[in-house]
Image (tube, rainbow, N blue to C red; front, side, top):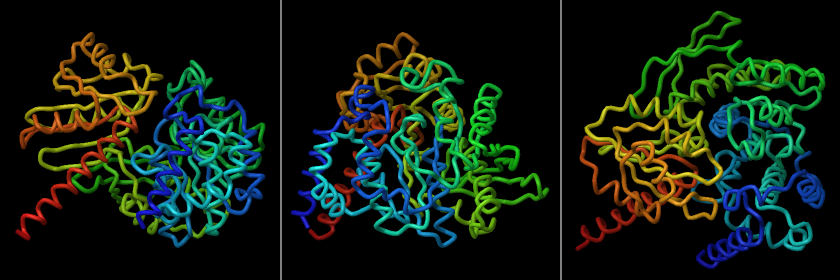
Length: 454
């Protein structure tokens, strides 16, 4: 078992070190076309053509929407592949079948078998992981795969599929250096996933983007459905495990009660998108989907799919919450919910990557919190000292740490029982924080067991 795990660690080191990786290097790692992905998949006999798929793009919410939709399909008895990115702790989080990650052994075997192809084509890290996912889904004979784009849409490596449904969650300003300086330019990139005769669900309607999506749909002879035209949601409450809604199915004039185990208030947008998507899948493809089973699935998304990092309560007393919000729109939603948290004293662990508009995000952060600035262990991370300098300029107070683990330790040492801590700013900050706290918990459990034995 250890030898197998060591082989997996060696395989991941090979992929990380040899292949350009956007999450580490940024723009330099991106390939400006789909050529490598097409060549890789051709070498694998085009596994993406052997299963049905749903393609999801958007600035925010596409990961949550992907997990929700996978949970719904799985609850209905379908065998579901789920491809998302980036991962928080383990690379294999990116590729799941019915909520279970592919095995370490499968990853090792895939890379060993196709090493010559990898070294001939020289794909990016993301390109090879997309091909990996398609191969896993084909081998496991999934009924349907939910595929999340990595960045943009038109030139994203996942965009070689022809899905039965395309979903665009929303459009806001992010990755402006890659996708465009305006909402309309970014919308055009996301609209690149719209395929001929494949219906499109758009999660959030916006005057600036409506024309873009309408024109793309006309050109590709398909129809755009807006989630909010089909469903409305009213949030009625939340406790430590669930948030509760009344869902209005507009065409039928029905009101349904539902709850979800994903706690961010911003999830109401994603729930509407998923409810709309299930209606389109039923109407256009006759998938065996019922509303009662869909509602049941939404109550256990985390348990079904293993979703983490979305307003996730890592600890109750003192309260510690982690959220992967990493751009202006996402952070605005998270901070609105954070401001409603009642605590004696508030702390925030925060760090960013270099290509974000950090000053703009920092400007909206509350002055009544004490900050713990850090950077993830990746070259693309903005140094904690730079984040702190921007924050000080904005009137925020706090301390700088060399690592995320140090920030977690430092912040926790300052927390009283009635205090609250938010961990946010990037997937990588949250991932390292979750891993740190899991190791701490494991160590405490081991020490407790040893004390009991003695």
